[in-house]
Image: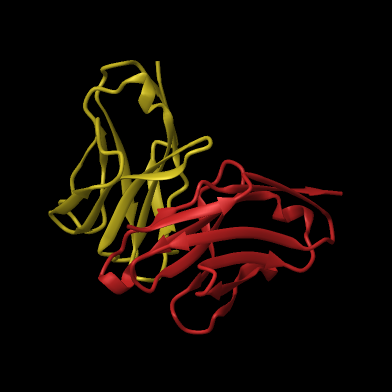
Length: 115
Length: 111
């Protein structure tokens, strides 16, 4: 069984500061990992994904994430926060290696950006 | 434009009145899924479908039905809605391993 833990349901950063959203996963097979963003009153949009190629993955809007197998982590970072980054972020894991399409989501981290 | 559409976007109904939320995708994806999103619980999968006429239960299937008669459509049916099904519902579709495309959501209130 796979699971995802996102540390911190709310994170606040100042505009221009580093954004770090934490995600740890468990999976019985090599996972595919995803970060999604949800802006208020909208659906989920794929930010980036790890699919067993490069461990440092670059996504949209300046975000990136690093897959660390030894730490079972896939933390999301952005060097400089912008007001438009305020949203809820979800980490998800998929056991694609086991032939699955299934996504298991974390409970989300709401990011606030303080001017 | 590649997209997943859901209708209606907002729905207020009463306990026990059958309703259907439609979902359609134009990307020829074989996989489709329904989720509900509740505060503090993240997204939980209700049902999913690997292809036409193939459906299976997710984590929270009680009180819901689905069907997949055509590849592009995956309606969610609540035969007898109850207040605990008040939630935000998302449909998603996918090719294997590339991440899921989500619809805009349907906010359902059951009184």
